[in-house]
Length: 495
Ligand code: HAM
Image (cartoon, rainbow, N blue to C red):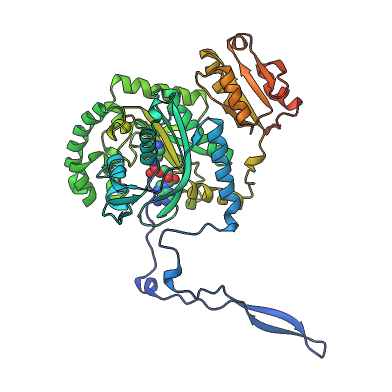
């Protein structure tokens, strides 16, 4: 296994090099003057000057959207539609069920989940007093609400894992800048009820494939922050280190050092960056079990050919995480600074303590969220470079059923190969019966299913089943693509 090591360097904020009097100068735009050639009554050509109409900006300031919030206009429909279609397709393909929760919740839900001392809770929450005097908040993220819903709707008694996805607006009163808004949209996937490295790997694959299917090439930056015990031991070391560097830290970090020292590691202030880079690394404080678990996640990612880099300073800005944490960045084109300034396209990780902390039975969980404004910006960049935005609705669809442990492992690799060819492969990698899986295939309306059992794993074959007639054909696993293509069941991207 190759572990690539890299630390993301934060970009320096470009200083405005204009002299100060220039900065304060009011810019008044002159109307654009166009020339128009016409012919006069003597037949000779004359050139008339005409003024081009400027779009009227005559509306009162309070009619404009609030700062950091914006309208999504028809001219951007194709990008938003592509992102929404892909979210729905991929979530269903990996068997996540759609859920929607209210935008307003009791503010204590977010404080207890995300944690005091985080920027989101301390500085960015929209909090209001409701008419009955209770405090409510606009959701700054979806995970807290989804966990609340899992507990209050009794989903703990359903068969686990319970996998849910949602898309919708979130609100954070942050300083607006490139890729950062006060109202923004996220695509979220969460898996409740099972702690296994394959669950974390599957979520990372879903996030990675979501971007990949849209034509956005990306890399996963990954770390482990271990168990609570690992973190407690590490925190003692970190606080001692931060105290020794106190004079180099920003005022916020000086406070965080005592209140929530881990949060210093995701401080964005430039003066703190050298201190953060040299800080002790949490990965060196992981216990045997946490290390083993993390290695297993990386092994799965290797197997599924997801490009990743270890990032030892990555801790994420929310308090609920345990073990695996990750963020996804668009692959950088060094000449294009516009893209790099908008930050991570998505992030997530495991949060095994949150459901218990909020009053549910202690239950492991893991998830991610991708910011759709940043995805749309990446899609627009691609379009400007002449790339087509994929029409995801028109993709070929098929169901992949598997039975038995060995078949499950083999299926993961085969599914990913077909996906990379642009085929939408629905599946439910779990222990459900063949009948249950084929019912799901019918629900998704596919015409054919692939079936892989223990026998097929041993002899290197796979079954193609016509869902209408029930007729089955046995084919060589190496030739799945060609067989599906031959029967006009799929179109292959690479051919
Ligand atoms: P997050 O890293 O805070 O994680 O947000 C996820 C993504 O939402 C970011 O990578 C970014 O693309 C987008 N995003 C965040 N803030 C803004 C903003 N102000 N403007 C535009 N886009 C933004 C979470 O929210 C976690 N709930 C993810 C998660 C799910 N962890 C486990 N499950």
